[in-house]
Image 1 (tube, each protein chain N blue to C red):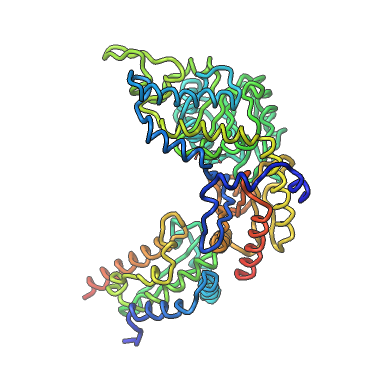
Image 2: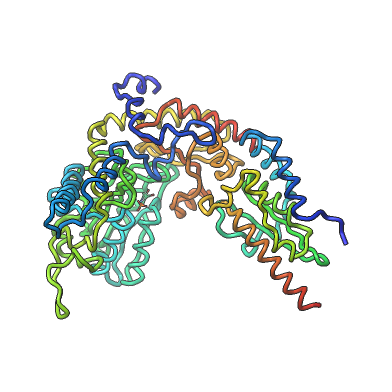
Length: 413
Length: 147
Ligand SMILES: Cc1ncc(COP(=O)(O)O)c(C=O)c1O
């Protein structure tokens, strides 16, 4: 597996040079950034796009007739086209800008969910959902009287699909499922889930927070009804994200928030909504970050997801093999198909202690429940230590982590 | 009554001990060592009402008034937190509520552990300090009604 790393044409050093933060030291040691599942670092082109927007053409969009407003609007809308191509949506107006996956899911829960769910209906999620794909449904279930059903997870961290098929019924109205687990890395068989759910008459939302950066996303091929993306996990800025929705569904949904931009005509008697996508983009949007999201996607496209994935898969395999050599380490999440997330516990060692000591060696990992408490309960652990890899990470960095880990365990035991 | 040193003097001692270390490794080794040496809390005290909120790890803390001094005992499932809490106990325990309430505890900053006071760390050194001072406030009220 070391060979696959070395024989690839993928030039990781050239990529690293594009990420300014990777040059810094932490506690006097070179930064090893393995917290990519929480947020990815930003390439220079993204940082430049932000600066350039503010330095050259900052203006409020859509309504202005002056040059700056035109340029800002064009840049903002260009990102919509780029996202459309990135996930192969059929129509550009199916791309709604939100603050991120959390807002995208809430948007669907509060509009589609609230208008279509009634007492006795069911929403199916899974046992490996992020809190942001649990809590909105709990809130809407409480409002509507609908029930939440949960697909169980097996010991390897895979969904028990037979149980999903059993849960599916004519009562199922919505299935909301994570594409790739942030805690375990598991890639779920969303295509099968979508096909089965559609046969049962339900719509499907896919939480693409973790999958979008690693996997090729084709929403038409998947045939999902909604797909949620966070920009900050795809090398883009924080504070911006995407909700993809099928046009006919979005058209039938009531607005999420009221205000400027989202209206056609306002009078005290009757207000009419703007067309898609603006109906769901109330108020002045996050223009700068939207503009810079385009730079992030262009960057990913310039590298190619296939090449990046090959590199990341090799890193995951190497890390998994190395972790297994460390005495007392138990990997949590051994699914057949995984994105580059290695979650583990060390016998007799608290994840928090590990996190602190790894940070002392410049290694940034995440410890805790990763916003998936029900999943941690499923495995009977309070949390894990999670190393998650991006295209700029290297095998040498994994060696640094393993050395730091051995040292930490020696101290802590 | 007892001959405990003033809080500031104990803080000074700890700062002196840490000044011997020049690397983060050594500092944490020392804290871990203190954590390992902290006397375990009796299991009967390990219940929800003694848990300190806001910690990624679990911290249990109990206190009692002995004469006019507050005695703290604590434990955690994480060793570094246990080390940090054992320092707090060393500094604050066996002092009067008034002294505890007034303690500035700037030794934490001076030994380079200020980052553990940050909210983001979520290992709750801040929550521990708050809880210890809160307990002291309650005892102060008890003592003043007695007098
Ligand atoms: C699987 C998953 N879903 C949802 C989210 C929430 O994303 P955001 O915080 O960007 O809204 C995350 C981010 O941690 C995630 O990993």
